[in-house]
Amino acid sequence: MLSEKEIMRIFRETQVWQEGHFLLTSGRHSGEYIQCARVLQYPRFTETLCYELAKKFKGEEIDVVAAPAVGGIIIAYEVAKILQTRAIFAERENGKMVFRRGFEIDEDEKVLVVEDVITTGGSVQEVIQAVRAAGGDVRGVGVFVDRSGGKAKFDTRVEALLTVTIKTYSPEECPLCREQIPLVKPGSRKL
Ligand SMILES: [Zn+2]
Image (cartoon, rainbow, N blue to C red; front, top):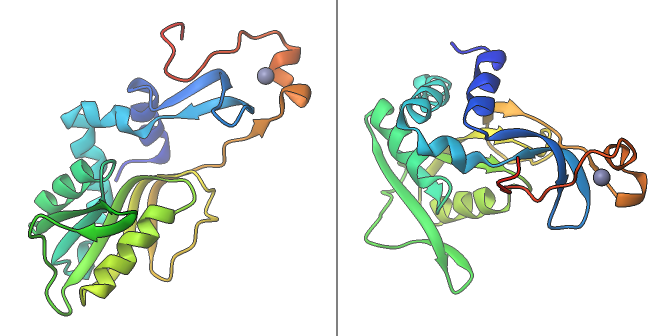
């Protein structure tokens, strides 16, 4: 079992977790930034994290791992490989999250929903609904990072490798501005 410290080390090393002084798209400032997809560049780390996630659902006898596109696709594949199940993904069609491409869920199949990061939980909730509409039995949700600080709730079990709340500030009240730390846009090469 990886400790939270070891998981954080992977997130820092792959720059999923960044510290500095960030200008968010909302116009607010923050001292931390999370870009979960970055870890997916590294199959070795992805495998390690998915193994941790899969372990949490070992007793559930999952039949299918389902994810929202795009963030969850690689995670669904990797978790399914470990649990020796199928992996499918849902995607938006006319604004609605649906299973296309011949992906099907049989009546009462046990489904694990995975995603890289939960912010409000919106797309995960939509996948849960799509699974149920197909007759599947949602046994839980597994994510790398819950950045809602545990506030995003689902009527099923949720397991996150890391649960965080990112503090944000208006420019006027930002302590990092007061310390005159250079402000950067996330993903900027200046980091
Ligand atoms: Zn600031």
